[in-house]
Image (tube, rainbow, N blue to C red):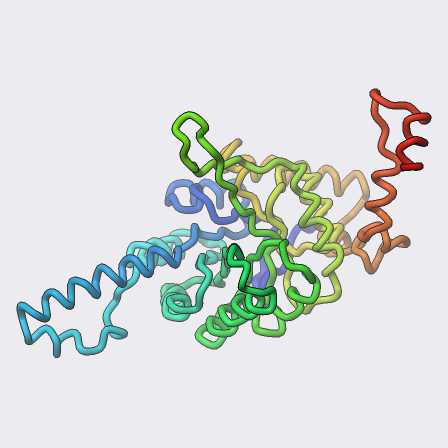
Length: 345
């Protein structure tokens, strides 16, 4: 019998199939359907730093106004830190999910500074979260801010939350560091128990008729799998942390590739939005069929067997692969003569 069980962030999971943060994991009915379809764990939608800040400022303004009208309020609310200024609805939903589901529930914090993260990291732990995922979303748009400052900002957030909570901590980051492998190791050394690769930065679009900058959400495809695939293969065995793959996971074959690279779990959002919660069962069936065809008996047998440390040609993940791809690509619009001209140029 094929064994799909795996371990992620120290949690024992029935399979490597995890429903990542998205609209489906923010709905009680969908959460139950995801569990019934075979999800091994769920990541709830993120609590955003902007939500925390907004509610804090609203309450702060209210207290200031009230204190002027009712002086006794100054003593009643003397310790703002003791007052619940956060999005209580999120924590209530987290508690309800824990009461309803039998699979691990991972809470998510999304932001770029360490201000509200510590407080709400603790609150999520108290509400029963099995783990916390820090979804650090920060675009370095200021040309006066250097890479060392950006990296320090990430590490400060991780360090602050790590000191505040005892539950496992995963960090979801983007791929745009100049030294990704080094940054991954530093995140782990700072306190991350796992890395989620990668945060998918949504890009704005232009409405050319209204002349406005507008948000545009485009669901991922399997073609986007290759970025996390490459970096998980490079990091496997080099960082002492769980590795989760997200972005581009749509089929059993996608999952198999990522396990071969070294992933402990694979996370899906776009595929579930396209096909519904039941798609997890389809992906599991495809994965089992693929493993049976290779006479592979367990996820552990697959994991990392095609990582950079394991393959005969580790340069395939580096510059040599880039050169080979460009020099061997063919097209119906040019022949070998054309290739020679390109090579000479």
